[in-house]
Amino acid sequence: MNITIAKKIKFPADNSFEVVERKGIGHPDTVADSLAEKISVDYSKYCLRNFGVVLHHNVDKTAILGGLADIDWGKKGKMVKPIRVLVNGRISNTFGGKSIPIKEIYTKAIKTQLAKCLPCFDYDKWLSIIDETTQYSINPRWFKPVDLSDIPDYLNLFANDTSAVVGYWPLTDSERVTLGLEGYFYDKEGKPKYKEIGQDIKIMTVRKGNNYDITLCVPFFVKYLSSCDQYWKKLFSLQEELIFYAKKVLGQKAKIDLIVNAHNQKKKWLDVSPKSLYFVVAGGALDYGEEGLVGRGNNRLGIIPSFRPYTMEASYGKNPVYHVGKVLGLVVDTLAKEITDKFDCHTEVWIITRTADLLFKPNNIIVNVSKQVAEKKLKDLVMSVLERRDWTKKIIYEEVIIPKPGMIR
Image 1 (tube, rainbow, N blue to C red):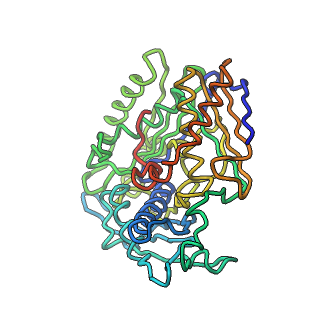
Image 2 (cartoon, one colour):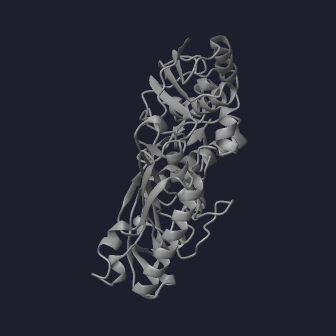
Image 3 (cartoon, rainbow, N blue to C red):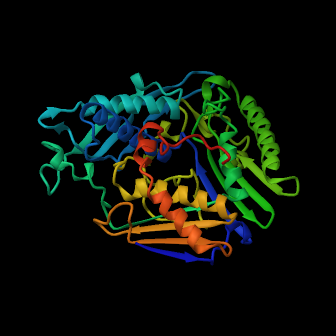
């Protein structure tokens, strides 16, 4: 294992401009991430309860496919075509000849998580689930294990792939305000504060110097508003609240240009039908055919920061025992935070594995910090974090990977 320490980091806040995006908890891509991860978590819990080991699975190709809503002023609205969840991947459906009720597990997981992502979604009426999982593998017993000898990761953890993961800390003000603006819509328990506002909230922050250009896309439930005038009154009131909140986060010296539902405002009064505005029935763009796929949205910290290092490893729905993109993704996030806290610096951490590396002895670790540090102390910290073995427990029982509403961190 090679640990390389560099001191060439340039913190994004030091750049003259910055771009940060957040897809809210009800955005189709975030919903797909949430469903895949909840299925993995619940399946893992079932395996541990019944077999004492997490069986091989990955459902990180899960998708959610939009339906079609019918809306009108002051009416509840209805879905005329259902929203479909495509459960996709490979998952062990037996152990030692004993059948595993995977359909029951993922159906319950999907309904539980949809109730959190889209609280107004009536899954008994509007949901269709499509199962495309298989047990295909070059090893016929990988997803149909007979005994523990077919679960080699039960005793020895090896990297499942040649992969790279990256983590960083701390967040910039642009990243914090982007997260916080979605968090503004939720209470401390993650429940919506505004009954008339849906959950498919999207935020784009562009910083140029000390000027912040912030755009929000916010859906409204048509059943709570009976006219175009009510829509605009709610929208402009909300916009003023959000500007006030952003100033609290960024400071009074920041110049903030914040707009909610820019498309509607540019065409104000041209069309007064609810279908011309961002009105929803279930809570977001899934109402109108939009689709969501795992890995197309936020990173593990809940943002899409264009000027940060990144890899294509999405954590959601992957095996929580040995998958590099999941387990070591959590490791690099932890390392970045603990290095920053200990040495009072900005930190980036990369872990690069080769297939069949011991999972916690990866081929390469690169740590990039913003100032001179005691290298031995830093390497000792890296080694101490890698010696921990509670990562899978955190993923399964604390559900640390499942997306949550944006909050300032």
